[in-house]
Amino acid sequence: MTPRAALARWLADRDAQATSLRRIERFAHEYGAHSLVRQLERDLAALQERTPEALIGAARAFMDGDRELDALMRALFAESRADPFFRPPFHPVSSEIHESLLLYHHPDLSISFGVTGLDMLAAKKTGRRGPASINFTGFVTLLRFIKAGSATLSFWEAPEITAGFSAASAGRCRLVERRRIRDGEDILVDGRRQSFVIEHAAGDILFFQAVARTGGAPVGAEFDSEGHHLVGATSADEASSRLEMMVSLLRALERDEAFPLLEEALGNPNFHTRWHVMREMLAMDADAALPSLRKLASDDPHPDVRAAARQALSLFFVDEEQIGAMITASEGAACRA
Image 1: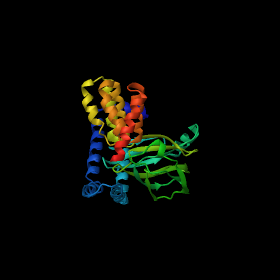
Image 2 (image 1 turned 90 degrees about the vertical axis):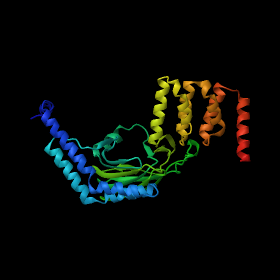
Image 3 (image 1 turned 60 degrees about the horizontal axis):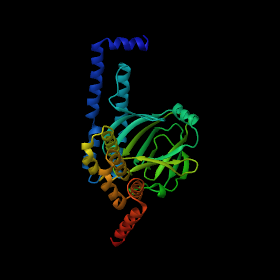
């Protein structure tokens, strides 16, 4: 039977669809009740401090259950062979160079099981135009290479990404070493200041990955592979990214009554989110946003936000003499403090 015919038959058979759904639900229940998953949840609940190191330690204990994980994967494969319409009850995660299943997700920690295909690496390298990117995620990540594929990795370092990160102080990244990875090897990467690049592989790479999401940097940074200088930064905080999206949506929908909520959002700890909110406030009601813009220009703790706010003031609201007086007053207050 051809795949198309099999799909048509399954779609026409409600009993077959119900059977597939029961298989998925049963596997999801058994996985959630598994001793490895329960122990991981207990370990996380028992943490007194949710530092990246402590979170990665809990993830490492989960990964160390080799026999249990192997049995789970075999059960997963068996279900897939028994029913071609069985769908693993794990959220898929993908990029240009990997396909993964999210085995565990918590606001503080995620663990996935994935593969980097040799064809995916080849497609990225052959399709590239210009320099490649070296990405510093901002998160602490543990990688366990179940099958390393004879891969050669280059390891990089850069000035640490902190709450005060700015393009002017980002510096450059530098090559630390280049070496081949072994099957079963663990690599701990502090994405606030470390990164790696897969330079070459002779086969597919199979891996577990744990990402500690608490205690990370406010942004991830991208550096040029040739000049090693900063070319961009992206938010590393999921909650702030969602906030930025919702603020933009409220502005696009012209929900002016939400303006007080946007003012409250200016208290966000991430500098890039504060400026995003400010921009949307200006687009929603520039006159109403003026007091908040003035406050950012004089008091915001991040120099880039202060500079951007002052530039907006000089372009749209006040003359240069007033801006100079504001800056002088702000600097004087800082010195007195």
